[in-house]
Length: 617
Ligand code: AGP
Image 1 (tube, rainbow, N blue to C red):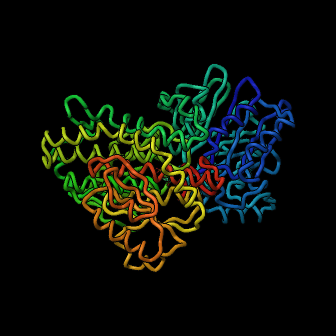
Image 2 (tube, protein in one colour):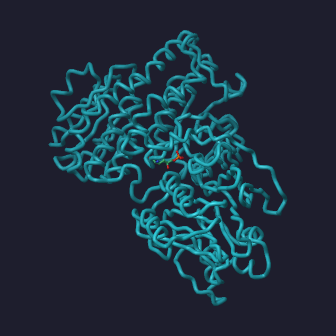
């Protein structure tokens, strides 16, 4: 989950590297560092391993030094091996200083390699697995191999998924990068006199409008104004160019204090984009042009298994409930890290749906690979269309949420839910479970979703009092039933990852099976209790909490005139059809977590210990 950036060009690389690292900092920000090839031909490295301040401190360090070079690499780190400190920060150099590398991924046979190096007399300067790459590659360089060959030979000795970028004094006008497996990507771009590499497209948006994504087993050399791709056998290959249609603005905060609040506010727009091209609001028809399965193939689906991690798993849970209730296909959602290892029975008539905004989550990719081997049809619901998941799946359903910089997912959740809802209706229609009139009815209601979410956002003020109160507690309980359960789980996840408060999401029906023991004044309960077929059940759960001295904050419908007299605080959402309610209860829970985080002085864009894309398991 680290951020990588590299530059070769005609101006000082240092400010460009720092700017590039700023764009990928959300992938990991424990520490940061750069290496440049100076005018004297040597490699100069500057790094800072002091947690959050690392990139800012690095910035001042290199500015004070007047560091200069036309070729360089940079890295922002999310620690996997070795504590967060200066020595463990990347880039890492060989003993003779002939090469400097930055790495993303995990070297699974690191201990064996380390012992071999120690036995050969190499003195390691860090606890990281990455450092061994610099030493092994340095040995190859010392025997006359090119930088590209040295890296490929080095990686050939290593086990695991990784991305490596490197500079060497023997070839001072280029940077080499390679990708092996699913440890995140490398995207390459150029303009008239420069060339760039990065772990994310967003870092290249201000430099180029066209990029190439490296596949696993590919290596790239970038030089001033050009780049060349090869396979690991040295055969030149033509990369597939992709236009970067994510507007640069999307990567900026605009009028918002942080990306989190911007992306929460963008949700009506995100829904609109997820609807466009699939829902015809005039004719009331719904199409999924991306899915070219025949009607018979769709009718032969006998099970839907949705997989994802974190927020994407919660979106998947919502999708499973929609598919089962609308298309009447048995559907479930499962955590990818569990699915991939339990040797699941996946038949050829099982439809696998992977939900992954980045398309690079290691566990989700592994679950997809497993499912592919079982011969099932796969759909990937994702944001990053050039990602690994898009390559594994048979069909991709872009969610069109736009670049999401905040580590905590918000608009990608609601866009994934919208896309999964559309898919549910599509499957139900093709299987003749619903007729065209019912489709029209559902489409008409979906068309109101952007404005319903917008009006829910406008009620942000109702969450600030609740947030101030919840910020005083260390434990919170979130309860939901049916399609509100994934929302309760998501609300709890947001509170954990943004405010660092222990928050547990639970099926409300579980209360009597142990959870009641926790109830009391020291643990408030947040409940999703809109007017729906499970409202009465939620009412009795709320009474259980109140009877045991617990406070209750309830998300309720506008027309609810009961709960206000029972609970401690209510946050209201507009009245709407039950299948749209999860989109609306989600919003105040996002705002609650965001506002509580601010109340506690947390950084909402870069929560501690987290990274936007988890490319290692
Ligand atoms: C949630 O706010 C986090 N960003 C995290 O749980 C995320 O949803 C999860 O890591 C899955 O990421 P993906 O959608 O890119 O696969």
